[in-house]
Amino acid sequence: MARSLLLLAIVATPTPATDFLVGAAAADVTPPAGYRKAGSYQEVFGETAADPILAKALYFAQGDAAGVIVVCDVCGLERNLTRTIREGIAKETGVPVAAVSVSATHTHGGPMHYDPIFVELFAERAKAAGKEDRHHLGDYPTKFVAGCVKAAAGAKKNAWPATLEVATGRVPGLTFNRRYVMKDGTVRMNPGKLNPDVVRPAGPVDEDLPLAVFADARTGRPFASLCSFAMHTTTYGGPAFSADHPGHLQTELRKTFGDGFVSVYAEGCAGDANQVNTATKDPDPTPEQAGAKLAAGFRTAKRTPSTPSLAVRSGEVPAPLRDDRPGDVARSKDILIGERSKKAGFLEQVEAYQVLLTHQMRTETGDKRPLPVQAFRLADDFAVVTLPHEVFTAIGQEVRRRSPFKHTLLVTIANEVDCYVPTAKAFEDRGSYEVANSPYKPGVGELLADEAVRLLKELAP
Ligand SMILES: [Zn+2]
Image 1 (cartoon, rainbow, N blue to C red):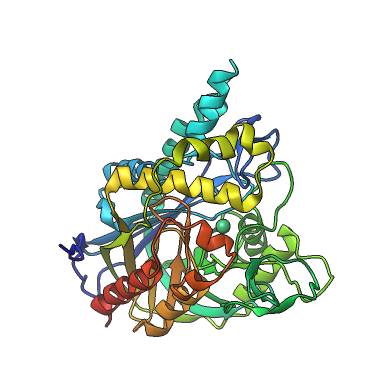
Image 2 (cartoon, helix red, strand yellow; image 1 turned 90 degrees about the horizontal axis):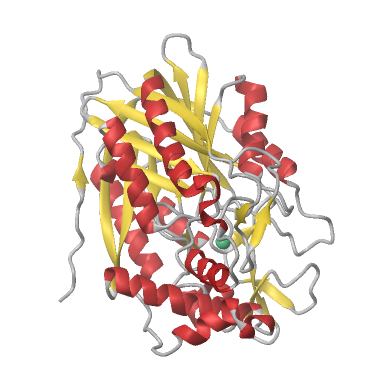
């Protein structure tokens, strides 16, 4: 029997005269030296931090409505971990779990303490070799959760009457579709610069930068912002921990808005988009340059004052998992951390990872994964949608195109594990990394878009 969509939360619409309270806060969740680092299929460790790893929170309240948006400088998160954090935040702030979002910026310079597969595999391997499993180094997983909750509680404590300005800026020439149709008919991710076998990009880019600026209603001083951009957070390639370009965006915006300004940056629908321009030999932007380009798009956006009208809705999408491949679990472990790993190719490792992830997801929640989707209306012309996973750009564009709001901002890798959600069409491609790295059947991206639009329409003025 098909499961019907479940509406989790209905928060009352406030009267327009009620104060709009907004607070922002950040907590430092930089891991200890020697902690495990994200961003690859190997076990690597970070000895230093190029810049702080932060959990940033925005708290909103107006009348009976309230919401919290937390974005962390990590590559991914995991369902149970985000649930723990969201419940902790609900307890501390009184905001219902359904109106709390916890997401990852997807920085590949972040710590790796959340991955449901590698955390187990690395622990097994360490135990077998009689070595220390660094997962609990400095009690980091516990401290991370506490940091996220602390940021949200701090944001509520800081909340004061605020005004709102909104815009959709543009950042041209920074993000590129990273999947290319090749002459042999396959689709390849990052095929290399000036590759003569490239025919065309396999999908679109979204250069829009939806943004909101919050200012103290009494002094007019801006104190925080929220924006998102559809590009992988992969400009940092060094060995240290780093927040990557979202950290540099905040540094830039503080030049405009002053010290203490909190810039909350979320990754938009960037499953198939990154900063690599294959059409030129020129080097790709550094984190500083990417942060500066985003800041330029932010500053030049024509912001307009908007009347706050806070409301939050949330729903669920029953997302069908792809078929399990029984018997593959032991072999997949071997490909990832055993003897076979020495000779395994990248796509083979990705496939092996997905065998384990799909199996685990099915064990956890059955054949249809109930995926969380949220919509936050901040004003009659501005809404925020949160989606789980790394969603392809075309899906995000569809949500924004069908949204009844003038400005729609997408936050991805929210409240769920990190994996890909390609378009249904992309599943027909041969050789695609993102399809190999998806636990789902075709069509889940389109289901997520439909649910997001349904929630937005409920909130439409
Ligand atoms: Zn990714």
